[in-house]
Image 1 (cartoon, rainbow, N blue to C red):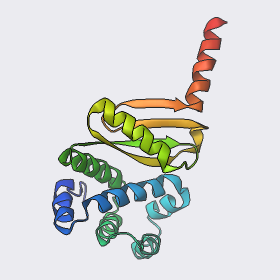
Image 2 (tube, rainbow, N blue to C red):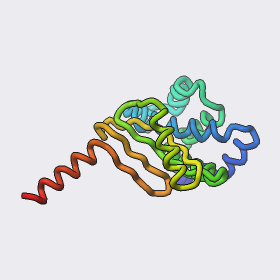
Image 3 (cartoon, one colour):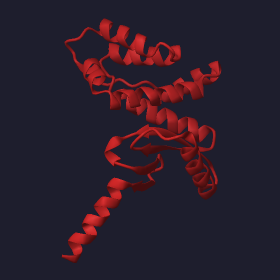
Length: 177
């Protein structure tokens, strides 16, 4: 099987019928973050020497409180050895859901977990600017050192991270020399 995809439009129709669209969209994002931040889990799931049965049992335990739809999708992707397709599915599904609801999606990336009030304040400010309801999901990325980065899925990036400020300072100092 060379080409395999899960159709995000069909997934949308199915989850809408069940009233689970936002839950599934959020959980797919969470699974992606789990795979991005847990190297051991990602390596285990991608290792062809480890049985699919073991991988499914492992994920069933980790995702036990997740919707059956998300568990079925992840199991299907493991079965056909296409777990890498999860990013595309989640990304396109999120964009499609946002479009249907006239929302803009983005990520609020910080070095450590911060209270939701900061993310919500940024979302309110962006909602006013873009005249759409902006929904931000939190992601922790310790490599930004401090501050935050907002990535809107339409391609806009607001980088107020300490890493970016240090890079700007370094660039400024090297220009003066």
